[in-house]
Amino acid sequence: MNTESLTAKLLDLVEGRETPESWRSWWDEHEPELETLLSRGEFLKLKPCRHGFQWVPVFGSQKGAIAILEKSGLAFEASNLYQERYLAELDAFCKEQERVQREKQKEFKASHPELFGRYPKFSKALAKVLDTSDEIKPAATEEQIGNQESVLDFTLPSQVREFFLLTAGIQASTGVILSLSGMFDLTIHGERYCVLGEFWKEADGDQLLLRHGEETIWYYAHEQDKVKRLCNDMTELLEKKLARYLNEQ
Image 1 (cartoon, one colour):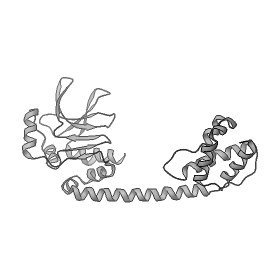
Image 2: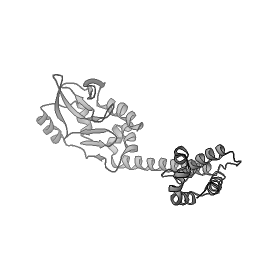
Image 3: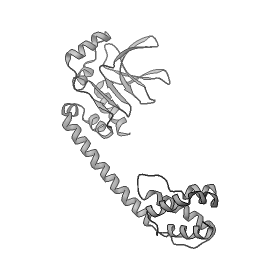
């Protein structure tokens, strides 16, 4: 590998005569030599990235090649081929993602019609982010809810009970955990709360809290060691707070 052969290859790249496969193959074969021929900045800009898209690496390398050729004062005519192929690939990817999301929402609605009917905004947002490791438990029974209330010595707010009668728990890896069986007592700054679950609003592990005799949902930001009022009730938590949070993921 010498400067002349490198320049010829860069011209092929800049003017659109390379394919993603030919460029990657050439780079893998000559990478050690290129690291000595080029400055560190030039080498890193030219190096094809590892990417899920086929045309992104060659498009990125083309930009690096253009900078090298401009610095050397050589004349060339840059091709738009790689950018056009990348944009077409991106458009196809976005359309496929939209199709997948529509299918996921359709499947979710069919599998959990009661949950979707009661909390449509939350359910629609949840369907978009569900991962294979996430879990939506079957509905809890009145007996199961009553047993947990006895264990906790805590009467659940009516809207929380209504939620658990649709599902005994939801665990989403994006930072939303609501679990009947996982509820426990917690005393913070001398006040007793019942932990409803987790909501990673500000940091991983931040908790959703209930107080006796209230529908209000509270929030413990553990990094600040503060309890904050989050919303009026369970419906507002699901349909506004959590739906908005999940849509932003």
